[in-house]
Image (tube, rainbow, N blue to C red):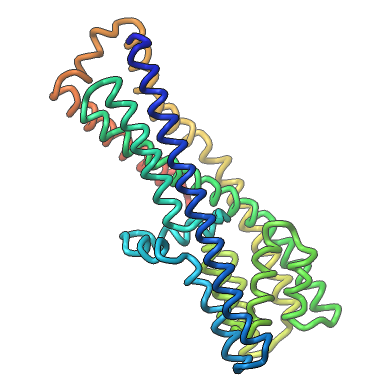
Length: 326
């Protein structure tokens, strides 16, 4: 492949990425301006004392959904956007679903345009559109995974801090605020949010269940159930949390042990997943004309699609076997 094809392809990709980033930044600026305008409009009558304070504070907290404006409302019409909202919130990415969809579409079309200019095949255009569009989703998923892993490691420390605060005589709501101020970095954000939400008038159980929904972890779910049951039937909350922290540490230790025991299976899965690509790349370097049939003929392209499909299914199957839930 000569440079006369690669240079325009690279320029097209760079232009597509630049336009995508510019659109995403413009959308985020418009979203931020609309949010500031909405908050200022709602705060003004409260500060002037012209309306009922309790009702307007509730509307102010609830009215944050309007800050996305027309683009945000339009993006919610796309199927699966509710799942994207949860993914963005859990990964701590301050993007709207509309901005995320723009990034996916821009990167997908940019990668597809490069593939079409290089190969001239609609098949590879569609394949690279899908591959490029999944890059932002994979990035957000990996960021969420790293955040959850850190949260999982810090959660027992937060429970210990909460237990010490309760034993020192602080009420539960005040102890949550102390964890939000002094706790580990990742866990403190969630406890601070629970503390602030119940201060704004949201019922404590609803604020606690909101943390469960945002984290989607079994340990947090057990913690929320233990706290809510104690509030209903009574008991020594400090002792309950102390036992819970010990149980979570034991579960974390057993989970690490399981990862050690299943390391060979995971490495086998990685090797089997990489083997076709390594062999294909080596064959392409040694005899490119022998391998080009898979990409230049319709039957070869069908075989490639089928091989990739079975490759994904096999990888997911091996991952399911070695991933033991606790």
